[in-house]
Every structure is written in structure tokens, then in C-alpha cells.
Length: 512
Ligand SMILES: *Cc1c(COP(=O)(O)O)cnc(C)c1O
Image 1: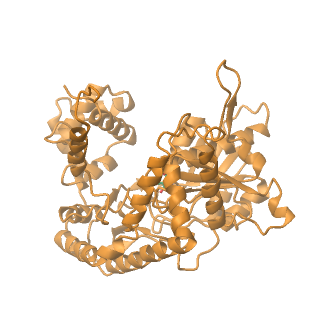
Image 2: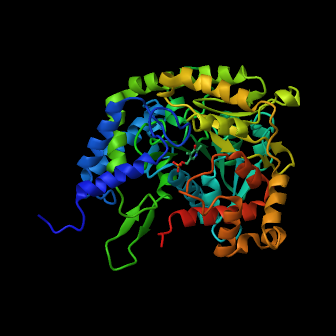
Image 3: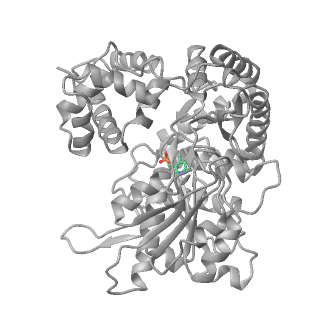
């Protein structure tokens, strides 16, 4: 017996107790973050597969050949689903047209790598160009592209969408194109409103100008690929789509840590690789951001694609589609709420129906808080002013998974009851919350707004305490999130950003 400090069983028991405090990952109670197939066998399969490769280092697929085999399997599956296999003709196997891919650690890494690749392709064609290239995308594009622009030194040029529906006009993208555009990004569908961007129209103008086009199908890809309704082509069927990302840890039902990035053209994709022989150690040559990496999420994803196959995925997509249809009808039937735009796939956003009298309106954030009171976690999304001055409404987001079908009646009843409980209660006035905050602070809120990004961590923590987000009993989120979101909207984004950095940094700081 080793001389351990603690009994492993006791440590695991402690972990199990900690897990009790988590939001439920199964059963459809949390309508974001987690993607429950409803099939316990798939979770068992994932765990067993991950266990088998636990000691493997995914860094080197030539040493750990199982990694190469699984990655080829997952990329091959994704390429079939997203119509990147071609027609078997010589043209289709041409190096410039063939679709190749990489398994990454998640959607963000797939998006980061798509941007890095496009930037390097753009640079290679413009030796000596000093300008910072642009990414052009609708404002609904995932925040991962904000991160990519920041990390890799590109300007993110965000194009407004229709504020009522969240949909993008292809002409609005076309108007922004120029020689300094390294990449255009569209979504299939977008996270905030589930809008399916006009991929074919955008692709046509990008292709005509030789500009790369990424389709971000991180959330929806593996659901839309098997969606029961007829959809316009949004994947590699569309000429001009140069890359596509899709997360296996979303509608691929794998545990977190696995996504796929597909790229049209071998030479284009080679720009994704980092390589150096300029140090005295082993040559470092790899297509992803990490060095040593786990093979577990890849093994889980590979096993799931093998076990389910296309038919299994189609069955799960059909379940999610049926539940989504039911829930959209329920929400449309609730007086005072509306579904935003024309959502495609297993997600949608809900806003206030402004066409009814104020006393009958339902605020989506109060609605989400009321639903949370009965154990259903919906996701609050703040309103946002676009570059053209129009305002996107504040909304509540629902992501529907296959398991939702099993609880759809309870959920529907909870959504109706939550609306009844808050109908007529106006949206929290952010300016009022701000005024209350200013009174509670010795120097008022103005100096903090002026300092914004430069706020030191103690001042930021003090402000968070005054808002009630830090230093309270037991940690975790307050029961009512609507006032917090109202404050997020009312404060300048620089200050909000700084405060959220402080919050996230403090929750992981070791105590005492
Ligand atoms: C989830 C998501 C991402 C980022 O994925 P992570 O896996 O969370 O890193 C990118 N784009 C869209 C549309 C998403 O929904």
C-alpha cells in the first residue's frame, strides 16, 4: 500500500459531493452548455473509450497510431455529413478541392484555427503588406471570432443584421468586401438567434473575389446535417465555402473537448500547421494550438460516430427537432412573448412581443428567472446596439437536445406558468439599477466608468460586492439574473468586461 495522504475513495466522495452543487448535466433541465442524447449507453461508451486511451499523448499520431486512425475516422465521418467527399471524379480528388480536416479541443479552437489559417493564406499572397487584415462577419457571429481577431491581430468588422429577426442580408457582407479581407464568416446557424445565414449568396460573392469563407456550424452542424426539414445548402455543397467547423461535444454527444475543422484544399490547410525545427528538442509540427493533448475526447467522439452511424444521428436529430417544434409552438402561444426571427435547428431565442399592450407583455429575462425558480435553466442574452444604431432586443436562449423530448410536457407547462407569473412586469430599468449602485458607492459610479479597463482588482471586487455578485454566502449566481443583465446593458462594455474578468478570476482563487 502506498503512503497516500488521503484515501482515494474519500477524495472521490468529496468530488461527488462537489458535483451535487453543479447544474444538472442530464435530463434536459439546463437548456445551454450541455447536450444530452438521452442515451445512457453513449455516456458509458464515451467513458470506456476515453479510459482506454487515457495514458496516450495525442501530440504525436506517428508514435500513438491509434490517434491517427481515430482522427481519420472522425474527419471522414464529418466530411461525409458535410458533403465534402466530392463525387469521386478526378476534380473532386484534386488537391485544391479535396476536403481535409483536423480534430480540435472544441469550437473555439476550431474557429481560432480557421482564422489563423485564413490570415496566413492572405499574408502569403501579399508579401510585405503592412496592413492588418479584416474578418467580415454578421454581428451574430460567435464570440470565438472576437477572440481570434484579438489573438491573431485582425480587425473584426461586424455587419448589422435585421434587428427584428436577426437575419443577415448577403448584400451587407458584399458591401464590406475588399482586398484587406482575409476571411468572411457566416453561421449555420448562429448561436444568439439560430439564424441560418445566406451561405450560398455570401459564398458566391466571396468566391468571385477569391476571399475565404468559413461556415461556423459549431453548434448546429451535427444536428443540421441530419435535420428532418429541407434546408438550403449551407455546407461543402456550396462552392466557395473554404472551411467549416462543427463541434462533436455539442450535437456529436461526446464529452467536452472535441470539435472538427474541415478545410477545402490541402495547400490551404497546410497554413494551419505550426512547425519549427529551430530548437534543440524534437521538431514541433502540429495543426492545433496545444502541445501534449488528451486523446480521450477524440476516442469518445470516434466511438459514438461508429456506434450511431448516420442513422443513429438522424434519429437523435429527429427527437431534438420534434421537441423544438413543440416548444416553439408553446412559446408562440404565450401572450407577450415571441420567437425571434426564423430559427433553424434545435435552438431559438425568445423576446418580448411588443405588438401587445404593455400590461400583457412578458419580459424574457423575468421569464427566465421565473422558470429557474421551478428548476429549468434558460440562458439570458443582453440587448445590443449595432454599428448602424439599431438595437437587437434582449432575449432568452433555449438549446434543445434529444432528451428534451422526454420532458417536453413538463417544460412546456413550466414555460407557460413562468410567463403567467411575470406578465406585465416591465423590464428591469438598467439606469435605475445604476443609480442605486451609485448611491451605495462612496465616490459614485462615474470615476469607475472613467477608469473602466484600468480598474484595479480590489476596486473591481468592491464594485462586484456592491452589486451582490461577490462575497455573498455560498457563491454561485443570485436568484434573480434580470437585474444583473440590466446592469450589463447599462454599464459601458469596457467596465462590464473588466468586472466580469474580476468575477471569473476571483471564483477560482484559493481561499484563505
Ligand atoms: C459553441 C459555439 C462555438 C464555440 O465553441 P466552444 O466549443 O464553446 O469553444 C462557436 N460557434 C458557435 C456558433 C457555437 O455555438
